[in-house]
Length: 263
Image (cartoon, rainbow, N blue to C red):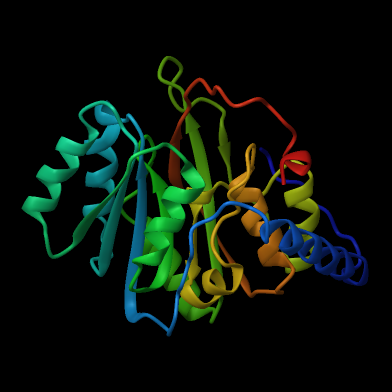
């Protein structure tokens, strides 16, 4: 998912983005999706972290500590148990009991990543929104650096570098610092080799509200789809050129459909 660094005229990109968003909106009307309502500006300075968990008991404590141990302390953690059948729910209950003022637990009976994230969004109170899956984790400076960049740059979407970690090979060469994008260039990247993963970004509440949550289609490249639709709105982007987000590489059952075909 290494980003494409391209410089094409914005007058080419913006019509493409608006055209794509119109088509995507049409598809969304018949898609199965939960209602997402993000009214108001949110609680100032508060980051809502939506942690999606599905049968990740062995990794869950690491993800939770990486969130709750952030240098940036104004965090509302919403953990969504996405139909887990292992000890995930028990671990989450224990953490909620230990930090009830910072963490809430929502549960779904069946597994669906888009619906789980949309459920979390419905309960978000923060001015900023971030997403993490339970097998992944952040550097302790992740939220502070990205929220700081959003505020100092008066931006709507901040993104950082990330790393894929293989259990047998470790970090290795799978490290990426994405380039700076204009909203127009973001279209090309999202339709091409990809931009940045969902867990390597923080989004202002207003932008997430305008996007209406996640598409609930299968298969779906949810992160590239979200950024592609965001690009049509012309948001102000800011890059934090540091390696701050980590993904634990796991075998995937999902058919490897190209991102442009999935969305």
